[in-house]
Each structure stands twice: as structure tokens, then as C-alpha cells.
Image (tube, rainbow, N blue to C red; front, top):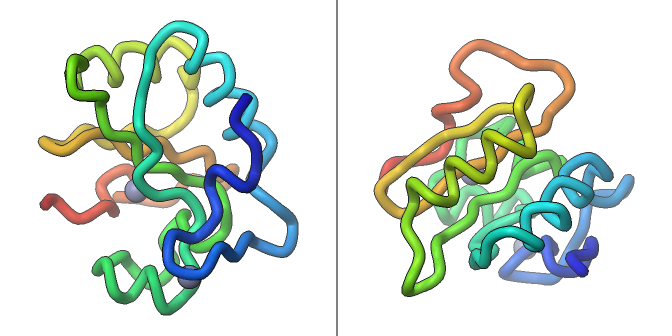
Length: 118
Ligand SMILES: [Zn+2]
Ligand SMILES: [Zn+2]
């Protein structure tokens, strides 16, 4: 069971005031039943977001986004396929290192590519 705490800021354990977006948590819980993944980054406080090079108004700042890495035996493409099935209307950024899932309810141009390509 994936809960708010699992997506807390990696540097300080903080969470957004309103918590992690329920739709994101629900989707991740469904996903965890079909594929294993590593939660790399969920909510980010302002300081942590800046230190990882996130854009200023990143969805990570408000509990709408998560970055997932494949487990050692998994692949980014398997993760992306599972995500598309469970978050069909949400944003998905696919990178070499993993995926950025974005459930922010007010899409804006370019948001799916806001995670740095590292
Ligand atoms: Zn922090
Ligand atoms: Zn991201």
C-alpha cells in the first residue's frame, strides 16, 4: 500500500499541506499490483526542488507528480506501458532513467517534459 509518506520530500520528509493528490496515490496503488517500481521523487520542498534542478512550478512542488525508476530487472518501457494503462488521461514523461507521472488537474503546455533529462 502506497501512502502519502512514501511520496514525502526526500530531503526533509515534508508533505504538501493538502497531502499527496488522491488520484496519484490511487493510481500508484493499482500500478503496484501489476509492476514493481522504485519511487524516486514525489513531493519536493522548494529547497529540494531547486537542488535537483526542477522547474519553479513543478507539479512535484504540489504533490501531483511522481518520478518512478524501474527495479533492476525491469525496464522503463514496461513502466511506461503500465502507466499509460492506469493513468490514460494524465501526463507521462518518459526518460532514460524512468518516468514522470503527472496528475495535475490543470494541464499546461510542456508540463509532461518538465522533468530534467538526466
Ligand atoms: Zn525537503
Ligand atoms: Zn518528475
